[in-house]
Length: 267
Length: 280
Ligand SMILES: Nc1ncnc2c1ncn2[C@@H]1O[C@H](COP(=O)(O)OP(=O)(O)OP(=O)(O)O)[C@@H](O)[C@H]1O
Ligand SMILES: [Mg+2]
Image (cartoon, rainbow over the protein chains, first blue to last red):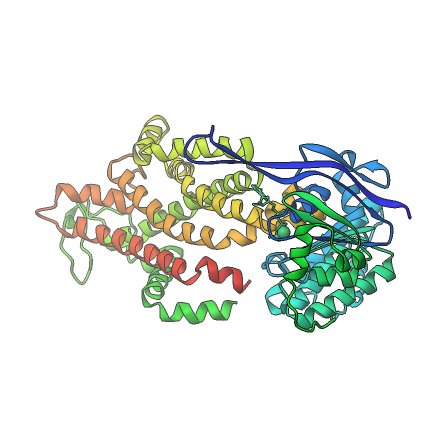
């Protein structure tokens, strides 16, 4: 299958000043020479413990931060040369914390509507207020939310509903690729299943590809055929999820699998 | 949201009394011609320095003008200086704070050095200096007080924005391809409304105090226009013989500044930033 996103030798170090004097620097190799690719129509899993560099990769892809070295290609074009609009239109993100990811002072209609308007502007469509509202309602319906919530505010919703609003905002751009950074790890188990199934439905409906980040290996095994295991800024294992799960080659991956609670999951 | 606020506000007796005083003062300023029994600049030498009585119930001054009427008209000066000066300070302070916090880097550095400079000047002497060069009229005073009192607000807002910038909703706004101006004014600004409100309320009190001090020194509002500060100036020459001439304008300043401070402190307690987040 064709590559949608290709990452080559990506490197991101953080330099922390330690102590009073700046010559005492600590280097954090958050992403250390990483290469991988996401294929069209797949959900690529990315697992690793806390601090292994997963979110850093996500932010590098959407260019919230910039790498020291390495390149990222989207459909063979280098992302570094994209305008923000072009990148927005192709790659969107779903965030971990459904409470921090929605502006508490803005209504749902504003949060999704402003994205719809940016997209209309990029694609040169001219839309009336009414048309924008119709579009917002359509998007809300696709993520399973009631369509009469345009003037409601984020605090009126539960964690699961907020995460749906976050997904709606990402979809409003009609992207090809969605980076989902632990989108369910702060939700109740029962709600997690709903959101996961929603993502699977949306993938089919809109022909999306995903980079699905999690620290829960079980979840990733359920969602994706292929996955990467990260440890301290490096990819320590890559391959088919089933195989990695059954026969982990790397010591760290083995530990990760052993650490999964042995209780019966909702899956 | 507003209901929650009002519930808490009602139980804060000090803030409530501050608000009531402020409302009374505002009415007094708006309807001064109807409230003042005399023309505040009309002289009556035959009746000079008469003590409080049924006819002039806060007495008259050295030119026989009615002190009560002068204080009522002085409210207009004090409140308008307070509002305009704080308006100028809020405008500058908010804009610079938002820019510093949002852009970071050299923009932040530049703005914060400016803030440091403003903070290390003794503000009152800076104002004195500037007024000494400009002509002391009410317009210049409003402007100068405003231009010298924004730095605290800039610091406050910068701090809020710096932490907000890392929040996911701002990242999401960037990813949506929104323009910087939209992120600053639509996403950040509503989230710093509380510190602005508290700063403005406290700021009005201190601007009124500054104007009174300037007028007292003869560098503020010029006679015969009545201002609480310049009534006091006249009063100090007669402090042993006509106590009412300095006592009542002093009381007016005290009550007004106190009212704004009580309301400001109360708002700060009520609109605790943590609450602002949860309740939208
Ligand atoms: N802006 C930054 N400045 C300094 N260090 C950072 C910064 N961002 C991330 N780091 C460090 O880089 C490392 C990787 O962080 P990252 O957020 O990518 O981990 P993660 O795998 O997403 O972890 P989690 O599962 O907790 O989300 C961590 O050690 C973190 O402290
Ligand atoms: Mg993370």
